[in-house]
Amino acid sequence: MATTSKHRSTADRPRTAATKTASNRRANGKGTTTPPPTRSGRGGARPGAGRKPNIPGQPGVDHRPREPVDARWPVHVTIKLDAGLPRLHGKPALDVVRAACAAAVEHHLGGPFRLLHHAVQADRLHLLCEAESRPYLATGMQGLCIRIARALNKLWSRRGRVFADRYDDRILSSRHEVREALRDVFGVGK
Image 1 (cartoon, helix red, strand yellow):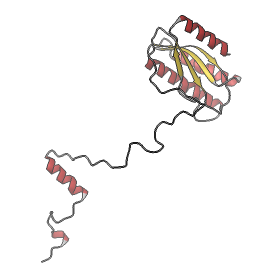
Image 2 (image 1 turned 90 degrees about the vertical axis):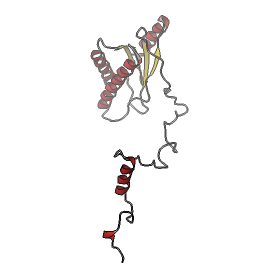
Image 3 (image 1 turned 90 degrees about the horizontal axis):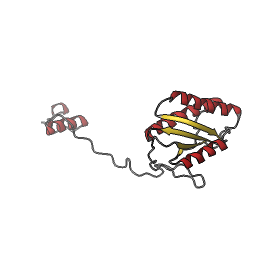
Image 4 (image 1 turned 120 degrees about the horizontal axis):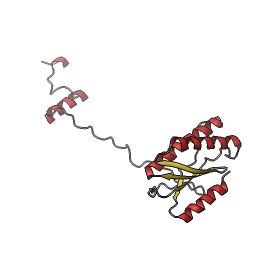
């Protein structure tokens, strides 16, 4: 006598995903399922994946770990504008950058990050900052860059990236280096 599909025993039925997980739960005895096997061909090295190398002739800031910041020494920071943007020497752009720097000074007053001086060149900013540690410098610079970028994008009626790369910094660990940096900042700025 032939059996119909309704009367097949569980051993005769084809196993589906639901019956497989149920049998896994019974086999473990804990009610948990075993993780599914990983799919091959996913992840790992792929053509075109990863950080793109710097373009020859246009070196950016290296992504090596930065040296630690000491609260005793100021830091000379340089930020370069992205290519193709208007120059910063026009009065409206200069006013926007000054207002953003003044707002950052007001915001961080008495805090672990201090903006001491700034100078504006046509395509870059020179800043002298103090910070209690590297994370404070990083978050302070992040906030300042965002503030400046938003203000410049609003002025130029555009959206998108304003700064070409990460900021470049140099810790001024002697009086001579501080004097030279002050002369550089006040010599290039307006």
